[in-house]
Image (cartoon, rainbow, N blue to C red; front, side, top):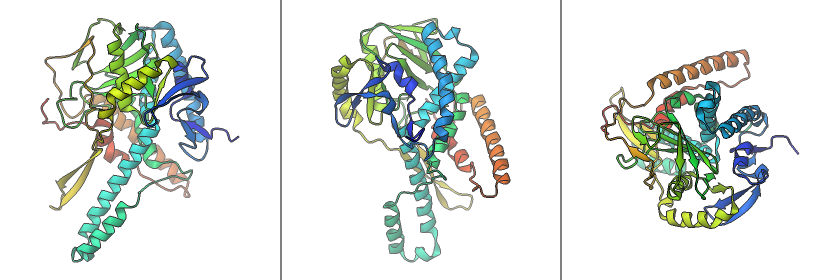
Length: 403
C-alpha cells in the first residue's frame, strides 16, 4: 500500500477524542439520514485528497503530533491558564488550519475560483471589438463557458485554490489571537458532536442585523465554536459584543438545551457527515436533523457581484465571496449581547491584519527566491491571494456601515 495515499482532512487524533474505543466513530449522513460506525482510519479522508503524492500529508503529521500533545495537556488540566503561550498558539494554528483543510472548504475554494474567472472572462468577451457587433456570438460563447469548470492544479494534481485557502489558514492565527477563549464544560447527559467541517464560525450579534453574515477571521462580533471532546468545547469570542455568566475562563454548561443549540451549528456547518461518540445518540441526532432540515435545505448565495467604476471610467465587476446568515438564532442561557457595542473599521484586529500581511510578503519573497534558482519551476504569483484576502478572510462591512 502506498504510504500517505489515504489523506485525512480531519486528523485521526482529533476524531479519537470522539471515539469510545479509539478505533471507530459513529457517523450520521445528512443525505441518507442513516447512522453507522466506521473506522477512524478511513473517516474524513480520501485517496490523494491534497495531492498525488504523500508529501503534504507527511508534513502535516509531525504538526498534528504537537497539536495532540497540547490537547492532552488541556484535557488533563481543564484550565486554559495552565497552557503556555506556545500551547495556546498551537491551538489557534489548529483552528485555522483545520477550518481551511476540509473537503467543504476545498469545494468552496474551487467554486470561488471558477466563478471569479468566468466573471472576468465574460467581462473581457463583452468588451472585445469583434463581439460588440455580434451579440449572438457573445451569448454563444458565454453559454459555452457556463458548461465548463475552470480549475487550476499543480504538478501533483493539487488544487491551487484549496492551497491558497490553506496558506491563508496557516497565517490566520494572527487574526484571531485577540479573541477571548472560554472553555465550555458539558455537565449534561447530552454530548457535544462534530462534523466533517468541525470548526464553526458564527456571529450571534450580526446574524439578524445584516443580509450577509460576518464570519471571517477578522470580523467584528466573531464567535468560533471548537468542540474538543464530548464534554469539552472551546469558544473564542469578540469581547466587545458578548457577556458570559462567569468571571473565569471556564463556563459550566448544565442545560441540555444549551448543548443542543451548539450541536445545531454543526448541522449548518457540515458538508455530509455528523460525527459523535455514543451510538445511543443516534435517535437524538436524527430528531435534531429533522427539526433543522427545512432551514438546512436553503441554498444561500455564495458569491456577490458588484459593479464598480474602473480607472478608465468603464464599469468593472468585483466579486465578493460571502455566506448568508445561518438560518438559526443561537440562544445560550449563559450568554448575552452587550447593549453598547462598537465596530471601528472593516476588521476587528488591525494589528493582526498587518502581521498576517507581513508573513505573506515574507513567504512571497522566499518563493520568488526559490523560483529564481530553479528555471524549470513555473512561476505563480501570490497576487491572487492578496487580491482575495478581504473577500475570503474578512468578509467584513465597509467602514461606514452602521451596526
